[in-house]
Length: 82
Image 1: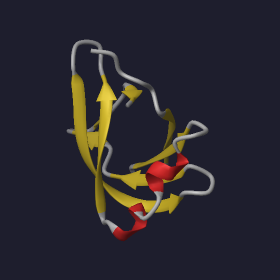
Image 2: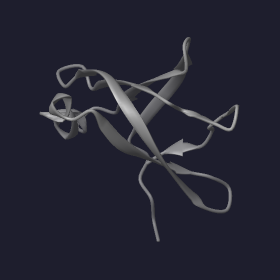
Image 3: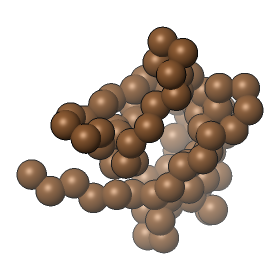
Image 4: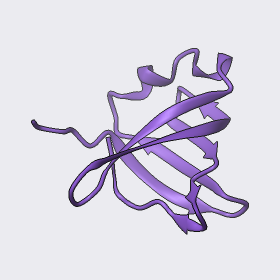
């Protein structure tokens, strides 16, 4: 199975993750602000990790998404954003 990377992310303070989608994927964020949570899919070395995260900020014009709840048992989740 082939996976496509949709954007990049950086870790912010206060258990937040800033996601910037690549050009062309911004439309995926339209109306996302109407929801409180979303799923993140992260490609790990040997598996796909799925995280339920709280939506903090959505900017569909810039392709920006800020979410909370990225820690898993005190360890920051790392992987390729799918």
